Image (cartoon, rainbow, N blue to C red; front, side):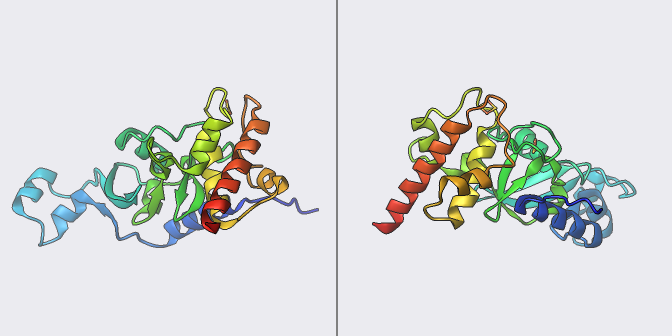
Length: 217
Ligand code: FES
Ligand code: FES
């Protein structure tokens, strides 16, 4: 009998992106050394700086992160987006948990969809719009989910909370006034080793109520 594999919407997007990466070239992902050596538009200074272009040392990947144009550097196009966001942009809201798209700790929003950045090659998000936990709200004006997680004291160690909030943000953007069952289902792929699921559920329901009220006003 054929085994059935459950794929969450986020995982499906990742697999789709990886498939696209394998079959298409990504224009925003520019191998700097090759570019400097092969394009007449490159200045002599660039050529001098980057050598003869026989070896691609680093790629510059342009994308938008939290509303700002950013450039990531990658000497390996398969480097996970998670590493680049944490190490190069200093965005530490997202965490490394399993590294296997299994726990959700590394979740970011990719055009509003929850995406597991630990298995997403950085070159596959060239040109994309990414939002991290830091981009959802500010300390002065937190996102309703961020405020609700504080109000409900939903975190214990806090390691999973990035994933819970980002997954819920993607879900609530599309689902007004969800039931508890809907929320449980939406967060079923996010793991919490501390077992604070009840408080997390309360926080998401509280945020959903706040968001529904604010759109009705
Ligand atoms: S670290 Fe990405 S899903 Fe676990
Ligand atoms: S609060 Fe510790 S893993 Fe969820």
